[in-house]
Image 1 (cartoon, one colour):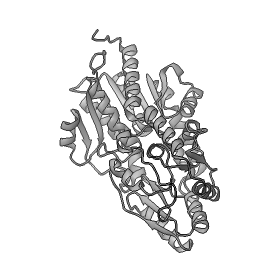
Image 2 (cartoon, helix red, strand yellow; image 1 turned 90 degrees about the vertical axis):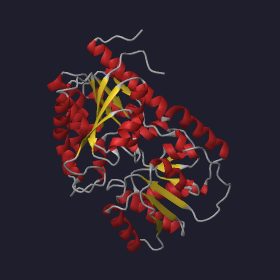
Image 3 (cartoon, rainbow, N blue to C red; image 1 turned 135 degrees about the horizontal axis):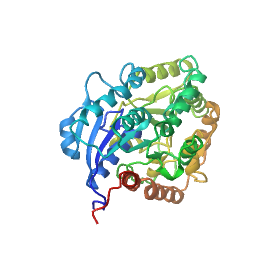
Image 4 (cartoon, rainbow, N blue to C red; image 1 turned 90 degrees about the horizontal axis):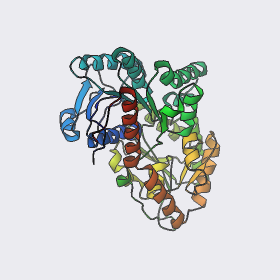
Length: 394
């Protein structure tokens, strides 16, 4: 049912192509927009060009404004340089649209679009809510120093965390309590900040009971964009250790076969005796679970705990705080050998189905995109009402 607030005209800003979602922040954007429309709001989406944008606009009941000057996205050439230019181009797109459309709220997705949203607050005087599905620059800490020197990474992280205060925005959504604390430490008002955590589409990841013993070769799967920060020394060291300790293990990479992935696979074939892999390529988020039916371990947590798979992870604070004490998730240090040892230990100690089911039910109840997005949009409505003095329908 629609909410009791007045219908808002929302400018939704993102640096990623909107549809189809590939997972991560791009998946969250789809569910946020769906919830906004469900609650009776008018959504104007501003994003890079994507296929079937006209039919997607009709499907979602939104207005789509696409950037067509050059391709953008996780796999586009010169991606990082384009991301640097994107806030300025995005700001121009929204300002041009604002000549004929009065927006009640600007909602930004990720830090790259948050820069544009902050500038637009100053230009248009419209309430702004920034959503941070991750600390975007945090991934750069794992990049080689010659690609991203540590002083530059630290400066970028400070800049990202400063965005809400720098632009005096009206509300902030954060992926975790840890990220929320960073914004507060930088001086942002905690009363205008809500952690909504990272969700998943529960309908695509139903619980699947596992056989009690191995039914074939062990399969270790990773899926996602698999950028440099995913396929660095930690991943390489873990694969080397597991291959040495568990010969015959198959590593399945569900992702676009980008130059980064190809280089990683070629190096592993050269340097890790007995390395075996499968690389089926990219597939839609809704079909990822099909790749998990026979896997004994995965390198992400939320979706895979939902289907009943144990997971091993480096100690990312947001994941570690949520899954602390959960028998389905084990944490290693930021070291390849240690991550590899944790994987082998996980394979040696199967989790009882009853425990797996309990963890899966908890994830489904707490982290499905539906309730998380309802919480996020309700917060945005509250912020807009408190800023502009709008009233409800009664």
